[in-house]
Amino acid sequence: MDHPLNNPAWNALTSGNKNLSTGTNLVKYFIKDVSPFAGMAENTPENFDTLYNLLPPSTTVAVFSPEEMEIPQPWKTIQQMRVLQMVYTNPAPEAITDVELVPLRDEHIPAMLALTKLTNPGPFFNRTIDFGNYYGIFNDQQLIAMAGRRLQPSPYMEVSAVCNHPDHLGKGYASQLIQHQVRLIKAEDCTPFLHVLHNNVNAIKLYEKLGFVTRRVMSICAIQKV
Image (cartoon, rainbow, N blue to C red):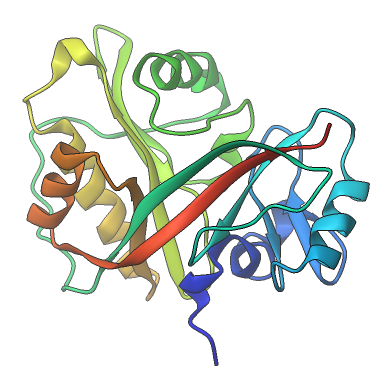
């Protein structure tokens, strides 16, 4: 049986995130304003055609592959990225924090969108919060750091949207938020994982320091229906 993280979007859309998915029995994608990711049981030309026909014109989606992909016509390739897929397999870290980690709700969405626009941790939409378990750190009512979850291909859960305001770097906020997410995920008997651009050296060093190890290199391709 193939490892669920070799096709993380598809396995998330058919397991832990199926409440946020739409599509067919072979092709699925996240509902509008949650996430741009789409998944296919297999990345075949036929399934790419099905996905193309399901989507409105000018829609951009992102698809995963363990290898670089050849995207069939008439899709337009916007960007192809190499990322490290990192997994946490250690015991849950000790709960030590010197700041309050605030559960983020709908009323925080404008602040979350502003922070992700500033720091660019990856795609973050109006309803990305529906993935759940977002926590943030505030300073004088300003959201200055946050982290949450994204893909949940059972029994794995992805730590995502880790971001830190540039005026508040070097204070350990990202580490505390990531470790908090790891504890929450481990408490559900699941395994934390994440994706990071292969050339983001500082982030990779931080994740390794926190106990994540690289499982494999993945390809993420952003494609648009023309």
